[in-house]
View 1 (tube, rainbow, N blue to C red):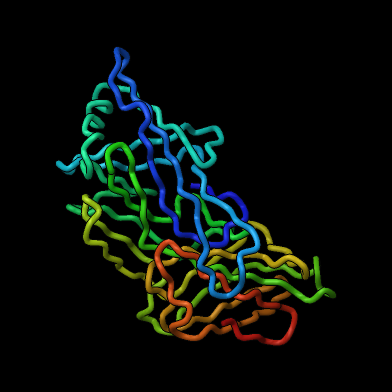
View 2 (cartoon, rainbow, N blue to C red; view 1 turned 90 degrees about the horizontal axis):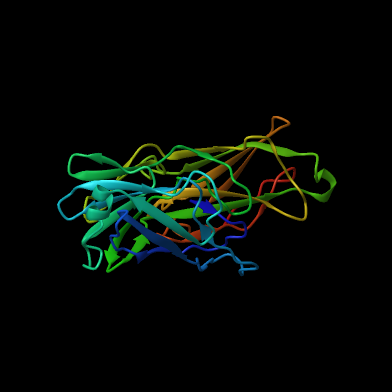
Amino acid sequence: MKKVVRILGLCALVSLAFTACKKDNTQKVSFTASITQPTSNSRTHAVGYGHHLVWDAGDAIKVFNNAGTDMDFALPSTGEFAQQATFDVVGVDEVNFLKDLTIDDAYTSFYPNAVVEGSQVKMVIPANQEYVPQKNFDNNLYPMYAHNQGDNFIFHSNAGFLNVSVTCPQALSGTISINQIVLTSKDTNDKLNGEVFYDKDGSNYSFVGGTNVITMVPAAPAVLDWQMARDFTFVLPEGALYSGFDVDIYLDNGDVKTFEAPADVNTIEPETYTVMIPVTVGNTLQIVH
């Protein structure tokens, strides 16, 4: 799933609206995926601009029926799908699999890259996350689950986001860059990456933590501007950062700037952006709050 620029809050619910769930002589069925737009509950500053989630080419969902059988359904590998996308399903088995869409809770779906492990479904919040500009995050990163209500799937997540914004003094604008950012929770038991598990029916969420560190590395050094902050957005499990955290910013000149955030006030909430006040590098140390 790709995020259009200018996100500032997330209470993301994804609605899969199945618009043509009928068999025909060619055994085809189509459904549309409509994404409810995010809202903001930022505690640090007012929302200056809004933004929304969109489907990306090749996005795939794994759908389970109540018998525990699953099928994958994917968008075409090319195209622009914006806030609403159409999944075209072809084949007798696929159409028969979707025959109970008029029944509430007949199906459960997961996104992205869901794999079956025994009686459970696993997704991953990785320890290395790719930098995507402007309060954005990488495709196939944000774990979600859904139940059908009739021919709609409503997606929810037990993950949330931390947005760290970085700027520089005017005198250094355009001349200083970030090579990587490392997010580290204060308590080693405060896990920031790991494996997300659900039962196949979407119940019994659990998180098996990996480490208390996440690293984000831009594909090319992220050049800083004094007037417009660079935004680095991390996907994190709910409850993460309860112990407080450090942000280590590695600059292209070899300097490392460390900023601290206190415990409790920045604990990650599901389907929510926590947006930090911008910090300045190339200057004295500051405290994030």
